[in-house]
Image (cartoon, rainbow, N blue to C red; front, side):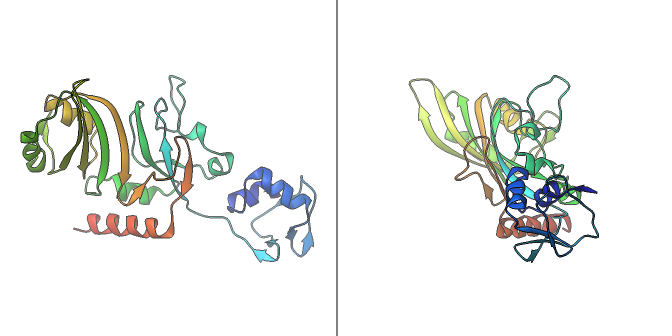
Length: 245
């Protein structure tokens, strides 16, 4: 049994606070009876309607967060640093979501969140080759001659990178830095930073701008939204094709 407003939030009807308003205003019925009592509890066998429309708990949910810098992309942290879960709205926390892969503490941008473990494993498993796009501000003026090395793949630590794409977006000659766009289709630990550092151009700032077809366009730092049906379908298609090759 759980409180009606919590049940409404888990169904995606509204936040818990908004659900309380809906209950108080008589929009919600349970087993044919209008309920306005805040402490009312329901079970899975009850028939709950909102304005006459049936609702059901979402089994799996899928979100994208524009992760800020200074936030760790784990569910919790033994150093008491702020985690991505701690900055989510309460109605999303209800679903017990977790990050799909990781972004470094000082990296911002696209971070997917879900409670679907199988989906996560398809997206970040060793067979996955879904594109991830990054904007990196690096020390030094990145030479065009190194782009070919990125395209072919090169040794970083104990592995050779898969072929990737790199575009030079701008040079800041005054501050001796470059802005480069790097597109990779693997996700080893600290890979972007290690790749660029190995080439001799350490990363100063890093933003992930895209994961597959999902971007942070229109999302301010710290904001989160649900994936659209098209985005979800596209990701499923990418993940399925990758894992059955």
